[in-house]
Image 1 (cartoon, rainbow, N blue to C red):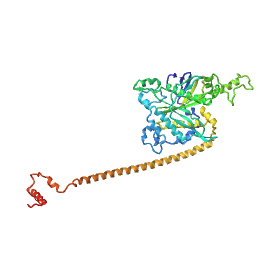
Image 2: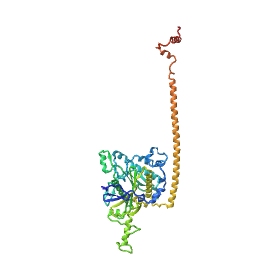
Image 3: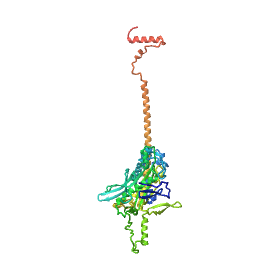
Image 4: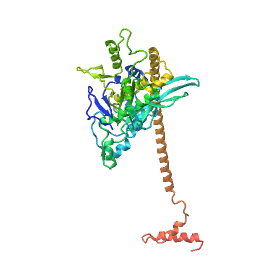
Length: 500
């Protein structure tokens, strides 16, 4: 069972220590995006048309999409429409996960609305992957095909290992994941990027829900990070199983995770040096590689000579993750992690991006696009991706080719944006014209109905015979004069044909 350390608000220069069984994780939050993925992929994301385009909700210098009527979303520019319309249904947390502030929420509403968080991430991944078009074409004996990234809205539990025959099944269920799929070539779909959300009240608060109490608290920060670290260990286990390396030669691995807490998104990266994971598996490690051996040199036959020890320590230090720390002046500087404990790993995370805000939404999309590009570049240290790129080698384009392609895509995106605006204005004009015609038809129809009603009421007595009215007035008013009475008698005699 996880035993997280006491929670506290993280600062830029501090870390949170999480303990899961016999492993420890130092979690560094609010880190720059460059601490998670190489900066070159963030630069590519900046140059892509996906980040540059302004979505419908943030047009006209709108900074908060909650000020816009989402039901009036454009029928032409439908990018991210499903994201924001679903985002309106997620739990309304007033504070972010990193602030670690307990909030009393309705247990029934939290349980009912928590599932929409996974829908938001799925819709965002679907839109981004469709626009970025990351496919790697391959050719084999059977013909040509490609492999690509695909979002999946699937919740599942994964086992994870903390050592040899130390398997646990207490990892939280995922809210979805990104898988690597194949089309036209042989391959099996595998998850490579899990998604984590607040699926229900925390285990410590779940009894409160079962007892039908009115309120429940979301997961505390330390408990939530412990659950996410378990999910990362589960993904690490999957990566290593695909590679099937010798027990004392595990390669360095990295695991990414997308998290969503209400409307705030964050990204985590865990780095697992091969030296440490090999030690956990078999009690020792052999970091020797073909291009860099740690055997004694010809000049120094003794293994424990100063030259060989220095070279061995250099290999060990290279396997540590680089974590940004803050100097006294406040500027970010990179330092080698001095942690040498084989049971301690480092996890770094971005800040929380509030998807309702224009600046945060753009930054989240930028980070997501850069992460997806990094995963499909063949440079990510993820076991299944490494195995796939080993089977289907991919030669990356030159810098000039990349810049030319980015320029072409920007031109296409600009042209599509202008065409979209023209279509929207044309559609608005047609809609106004149609509404005007419909309104005129309605008033014309109502006017015709009133005229017909007046005509019908004016001929209400048409169906009666002309002489019947004479015999109806049997009781005449005494005040009437005698001349009228004589006229009536005379007319009656004439009509009957009798003489007076």
